Amino acid sequence: CRIQEEVVEFKLQRLEEETSDEFRERAGRWIRRELSRLNVLTGNLLDYRALIIDPPPGDVNVSVAAAWGHAPQSPPCHVGWSKEGAEFRVTAWDIARHAEDLILRFVMLDSICESAGVLQTWHNKENWPPRFAEIRLIRNLLVHGSPLAKSEVKQYLDSCIGSMSGNRFTNRHSHIELARLRAPHLTAAVWNIVINDCVETEVEIFCDMPAGLNGIIIETLGPHSIHNGHND
Image (cartoon, rainbow, N blue to C red; front, side, top):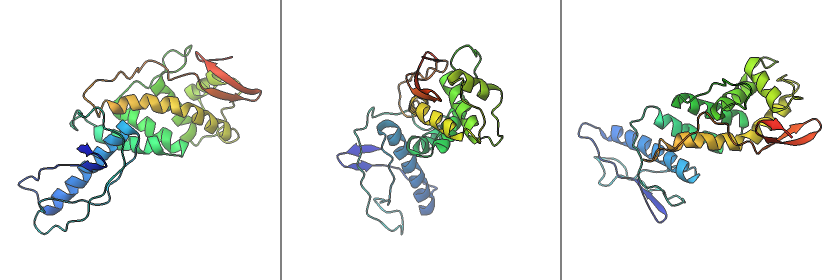
């Protein structure tokens, strides 16, 4: 993958045993995953509209190549695609990073965490949950169908806002608002997981640490800032 001015260029070598259709299918898949990698690095969700092959393999029809707007690629080297689950995580990030639906975003963030095998347990209930455990808690709060949140999810709500009901039906709006306000911090935390699939340098993901706590949460008495896991 190479970026020059306004064009993203990919160079792929056809394997001797590949048919034209197999090569085009593989090329399309490899291009899509490289565009997902660029999304991780730049925040731009890119797609390709056509594939030009030069020289053309056999009787493949040649289409005009698409051009994409982009930010400069940095760093230019990455670790390849041999890491298990890496391709899934970068494509899941496409959805998580750009999804407007909060429920879908947290489902994808949790799927990325699960794929990477990061810590998602909340051992010390006296402290705010670790970042990836909080993602699991919010995901469970939003997607489960039982009316009342149980066990750890209820403890999380009690730690977050003592006045927030765990009833998923009557208090749905408050749960969605909580997810919306925590989403930027938790999305940024998962980006550290995904960037490790895309670059040579090892990025610290701070598995045991909570995500940023300088957000705003809503109580019945009005907005309250979060500091160190407690209400002001």
